[in-house]
Length: 311
Image (tube, rainbow, N blue to C red):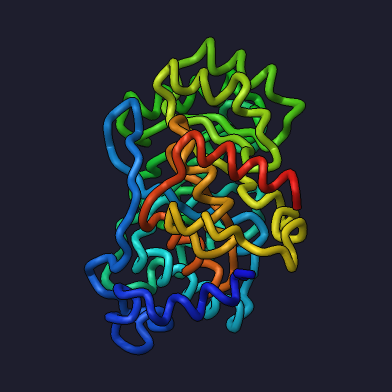
């Protein structure tokens, strides 16, 4: 049986981790060279490459002014960037998350290569404009890489603003998000009617509804896909508690259940980047290792699904 705890032991003998200087992942001073071999996917609208594992921030970064929590998150961020991460996704809905991300990234040296993604979560054009400016200030970036309309809230108004901002060079990419199956019909209509660089949606090995229409549509229209809720709010780990990781998982360089779930997601041809959230360094290391080695092919993905049905 392989657990997340077991894979941390494996990390100590993984060649590229073993070669790292002592304390690297716990120190805010980072190597200027990413240690992890990475799987990259292209953003269809531009061809820009993104690491296939990013980071979400829902709940995990809403820590206010708690020094111990911030120190722990600083180590999480350091690990993320050192192991090849780039895209971090947030939202004004996530409390203090944007501000904490901006503050802590400012403490990392050298300055990391951040792909800053957040969302508009309000009603009204002027309110949206003010919210975008506040997000940029809180995340401490000169320009947001990606701004998304959160859960389609007032999407017609905000997409007009985001399109305008993109044409003016104020942001780089536009998108929409959902984490609700009940929004899929509306989500599909927006994908059909508007020009988008990104969509963000919920998809994992147990919740595969996006495979029916949204993921194929994203492929057809050349839209990048970010995947939220890759672990279904932790329910996937509860489902496999005390269950053995199948031996054949080694065939696609998978050494933990976390990697199993993430490799399933990022092996879908429509998916650009999965964005798991964590406040634990060990889990971040495990997540980032999902970008290493081989990915499952279509037949292996079916085998993975079938195995999950049996546990």
